[in-house]
Amino acid sequence: MKLLCVDSEPAYREIISLCAQEENLEVHTASTYKEAMEAFLEHEPDIVTLDVLIKGGNAFNLVKEFKAIAGERLVPIVFVTSNSSDLMMDQCFVIGADDFIPKPFNEQLFNIRLKAHMRNVQLMQEMYGKNKTLTYFQTMIEREHEMAHQVLNHIQNRNEINTRNLAVTRLSAASFNGDLALVKTRIDNSTLIFVGDFTGHGLSASIGALPIMQAFFDAVDELTEVSDLVTQINRMLLSILPDYMFCAGYLMLISEQGEISYWGGGMPDALILRDSGSLDAISSNHMPLGILPIHEFESDFHTSQLHDGDTLLIASDGVLELKNNKNEMLGKELLKAYISQAYSNNEEDLRVSQFNMEKKLSRYLGECEQLDDITLVAYKKART
Amino acid sequence: MSISIATDDKKDYVTITIIGNFDFSLFNDFRNAYTDLEKSYSLYIVDISNVEYLDSAALGMLLSMKNTVSGNATIQLKGANDFIKNILMISRFDKRFDIK
Image 1 (tube, rainbow over the protein chains, first blue to last red):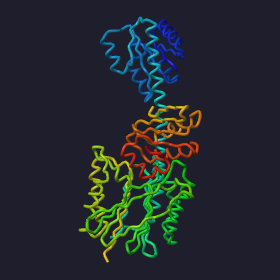
Image 2 (image 1 turned 135 degrees about the vertical axis):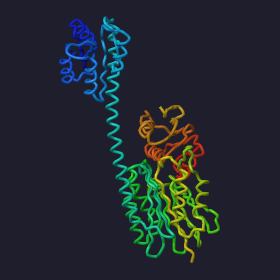
Image 3 (image 1 turned 30 degrees about the vertical axis):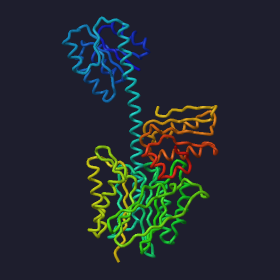
Image 4 (image 1 turned 60 degrees about the horizontal axis):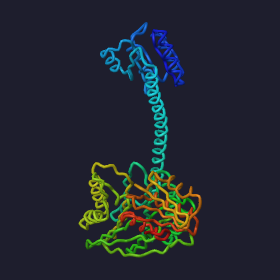
């Protein structure tokens, strides 16, 4: 660390230099305004001591110049002066002095003050360094999240377009949290739906999404069975993902007649709003995908039935864990109430119902920031 | 520290206690908690009675622990609150862990 001592009196330049060298400071001295400016520019000192009276210029101006040159760097300015009136001290602090020591001074005391300033400088330097590192990583993570979003958007572009009977909503949060929704109608008019939720955030959460997408759309073309597709996805994720990552998900196939075959692992209940207004739940009862080895994996699926006018709703846990300004989570019961209202059969077009649901969720959220992505898939069995 | 470790070599078990939120921020500390032990144990108790919230990253960390400790060892998840118990059951962690 370096100290610049600006003093017109040779005796004080010597005393201060000796004191500072005791603290292992590299010392530079200057006796005039011009010398001081040159020394400051050349040596970039970490601490400056100076007298109020200096030859060839005004010490207060000098301080202003130093501060301007130092910019964001902390350079403590310690006035050491014989003019120790209260007025002078006030003036020194007003223009930005960090300390004020009257001459003559006790050398021990001087060194204690010097050490305190050295500690400050060191702390600031460490903080500055850490801050720089943090900013670097933050920027990197933001870029990665953008990339993940782009990857995911690309995938979902292949989805079915929303219709009177099918609506998929993703409300993106600032960071991608691993939600994935794939929907496609097969040639036999059955609809294949995958709603998944990967562990983790950002780019790492999106790694598994690409192969799932590929397998999903291949399965649409090849009319693959639910059990076979889910086994395939599990096997893929098991080999791709590290052991601390998995994907909770529903895979559902809904026939034109409304018969649902579904496999669910690690997902909150999906709901069926019946034409009559009552609600039934579909539960996932397996471990999430990408955990169990092939011989332990259970691919058995369950069935349920949609009748005319029934609506099936799959929401990611981002919906259930949506927090309002009182930090309360939305939760199951309120979600059920919202669904009953938004998707009531007074409205035949699912897109309108979905829009109403989004409005309810955003009203619940209020001014709060949405932390997680929200995925909402709705399928309505048309009246025949 | 939000993770503390207590070993009992005579009774052959170790208790890893977690306090606060169990999430991604504990990734390294949690892994070190069971990999830095001097020997392996037949029972690992993860005490989560002071954990309020646990996210899917924490579930992943538990699965990773299951893969790392020896095959015959039991991992017990102790003291989960209702919210966390629900998360554990939805993901069927009862198939791999002893949930108390």
